[in-house]
Amino acid sequence: MTVSTQNQYYATNTDSNILRIFIIRHGQTEHNVLKILQGHKDIPINGTGFQQAEKLGVYLKETDIRFDKVFSSDLIRCQETLQATLKYSDQETVPVELTSDLRERNMGVIEGMHISDAERYADKHGKGSFRDFGESFETFTERLTGGINHAVDESNQENLHNIALMSHGGAIRTILKWLEYSAQNAQKIIVFNTSVTIVDYMKDSKKFVVRSVGNTQHLGDGEFVVSDLRLR
Image (tube, rainbow, N blue to C red; front, side, top):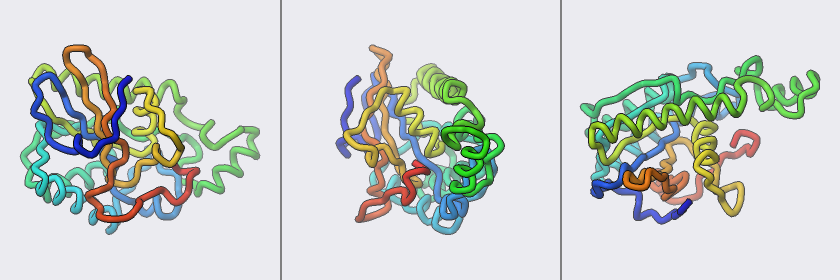
């Protein structure tokens, strides 16, 4: 699979043979700050999250990036991020489809736990990792890819050229694994809040091409990383 990380792809696509997919992580939540595992818990974004979404929307407007349609996780943190982003990019009339397929992984009994408590709980119950609880990687991947394939099929039927997927950190990393994306180091596969990952679907060959991962240029100068690598 071809991979490029050039920022030139952070732009509206005009090639009729390409469906450009802008995959966006939701804005920051208080659970993100406190290192509490969210999973399917319906947690809203915080003030910083709204600011991040506003900055993303302003950037999209200034660079004239337009979406033909948006597919979003139905959890509130994604919906709030999406609403603010579309508002500040003057795209409030863009069609939006909400789906549970793009949700974060269901983490089962450890949802709502601080990550350190989840690690201790896993050790107490003979698990190698807190990630051993909840939805299996196979089930999670099948759900996500079903959502992506639906978005692609529907977009192709409607002859769309640019769509957005609003989702979650763990979901986006799983999508990248499914697309066989490999980074030179782990840091490059960390997706910050409201970062934008760009994937082109080539209609003639029916192949996905990863163009850019975790782009945060709309947030300004500096390197934006997840402070606790256990939460990548």
